[in-house]
Image 1 (tube, rainbow, N blue to C red):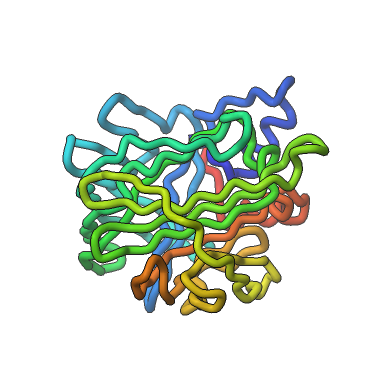
Image 2 (tube, rainbow, N blue to C red):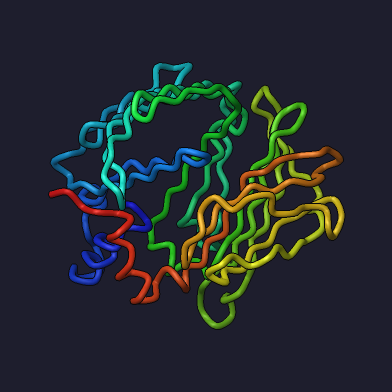
Length: 281
């Protein structure tokens, strides 16, 4: 809700005095499927397609519901750029809820909440016909200002550990001349009971740029301790990758993302976004 990467939301803010566009008029469920069968859906809808209460959010034909133990994501979307149906259910069962929240910017306007860093996940898709079981992660980001006004870029990753999970966050803030370029670095270990422990930030590692020349970096036990095993998403401003290596004394596989807000705000990138994020009125 108030999709941070929506070009329509960005255009609406520019047209509205004070930038106070309605975030609930820019809602979407984003589904990315990788592997031998790749699918992408991120159709934006307006506020009349949104309904929500304490237990459920519905966005058009799709929904996200919480029953106290399981988050059930009901997917009924149309993919882009080649139209096809993406339909099925994802069930996310947290081992525990953390209750933790972290400010990413100096003013505390952007909050990251690692709701459940250790989860079991069941995926059952009817279209395409796929199902699997695995481990997963659930978090939430909330901001009071556009991301591009608060950050220059960030890198994030989550790795499964033998007794829980590790999350690394590295954000370069945007601000006045004195604050611009300040960094916010988090290195956290989560156990299966929901406990959160800050850990010593491992070695900083520069990863290879993407095909779009997007810089990527992470942390590892040694200066060359993490490598890119696969790049799932390669766009002008955002990359999602799979890393392998050693972190906090363990061999790990980590989902990693890099985000450039300077790139995202560029007019040529904004003009490309509707091809991946159509809007249904």
